[in-house]
Image 1 (tube, rainbow, N blue to C red):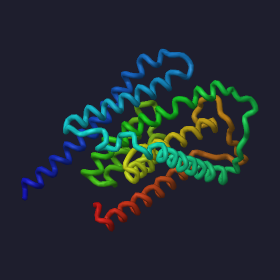
Image 2: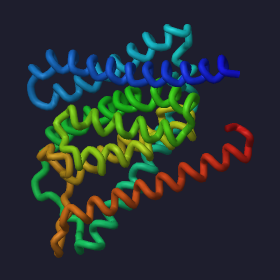
Image 3: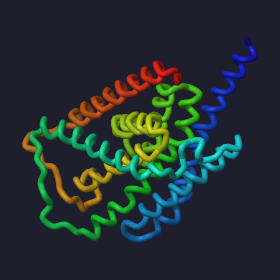
Length: 270
């Protein structure tokens, strides 16, 4: 009995070490990729950074899977017939979530959409091109190998928390503040993780991630300087409004996660 318990503990420790090791190696690959691409002009660096980051994510996954002679398909990192459909579903969910958050803030602040008079479509396009590869590389880095391994060994809730904390710290390494990293990426990670687990892959969370970032770019919320429209407010909107709506998103994501856990228990899957 003691041997079984010791093996179980050892398995948990190894899984945690490999999952965190995967994220560390992935981040190192991003650092190495950032050196040459940052010398490129205009909006091209972000595009190349996303492409090389995505390639680095796939390479990191392949290297870690080789340790147990597993394939990319074992963690859902493979192209399937429904991949595009799942991605589109994710985009729809992302748009709904974006307007839910923005609508909440707009109601409190008396906000309204304000079209931009002069739009530089070339710069706007350059700002949008990197969005997909950047979203994809982060989903590979956090919601592929690490998530699958942690969820199998520790369960959904523990995997949710570990991945969310790692995602927040990753953004802090990218220069984000502590508060913003935890009421932004930390919260949204719960949405991405649930989407990845339910759909058994990263197509849906990538679609959500992609559409959220696209909409923020179009609304001038990503500081790309070339929005399609902006949001003006009649009343003052302070940071606590944004924090409150993100806490609401976290609350709803946690409820959805618990409902999914109970459903799987009833079906005898966990």
